[in-house]
Length: 373
Image (cartoon, rainbow, N blue to C red; front, side, top):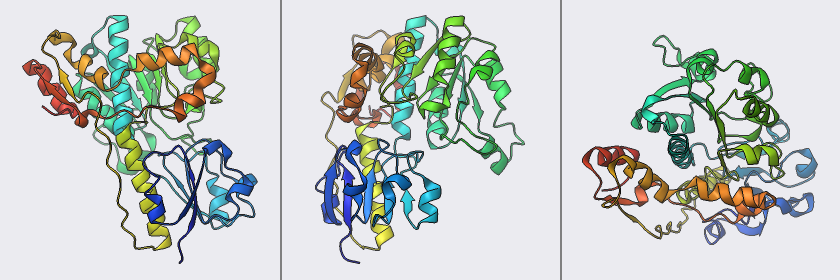
């Protein structure tokens, strides 16, 4: 076909100057995608800001929606499937970034509440691209890892006890982190998976972490559980009713961030690349675009010479990403939730950094996480 008409979210990094090699491109902020704006477009490249269903797609020329995200709950897939509109996502694009976020947050909790991660058990609910990375990192931190993923257990079998049931997660976990898609129907629906009944059944007063989708954890139930002392704390990157997040829950959270766990430069670059490859494949364009390079971090060398061995690992991880800084900012200005997301200074992942003067045991741990030495 001729060059497709594309409307792209203006806040998707590494897209401008590359997408133009493929088609005729216009850009708008995600919250300005309207029926009129998309009416004559062949393809959309989007984030999670706008919901794409009948109300916006009806009567348009859109043939393909490429989401530069791993999730698709912002796309009415039933409507698209029944109206000849293809949709594609970027599975696994930000798995390393979310792992970085979870690891940094776990180290923050350990410092704040004075415990050692090696003494703790973490329950991981949802073990796809992201959950698998989180599980591997937690093992490298010396934690006992419990994995719950009923769809995978059914598909792959579980004779070796690789996966545990949700009751085991509730009974044995000191931390519980969620990495499932958001689904409202089916036997394994995840909407309000961590609801009041789930939180009532906990045995160890765990920390609850949500860096997946906001409605997987019932925000009202989290507040009640925190006030009743049934859980020790929460780490929340994904909220219900974004950007109008619950101010009370925000105040109670140990770590509270504006849905940016997956916002590394590396993950965003990969998502953009996957989106454009999906577009090229769908329209059969036969184009090989030239992608821009990811800028190096401002301080790519981490010198641990003057850092005590017991804090070197945390120091290195926080050098790449410090969730406390973002928590302070969001708690100070919750009304800027959308602004924080749209103006996020993209961070780099571990392989962009070189660590020097680490103690031998820590050097090995850092090497396993992905740091250069």
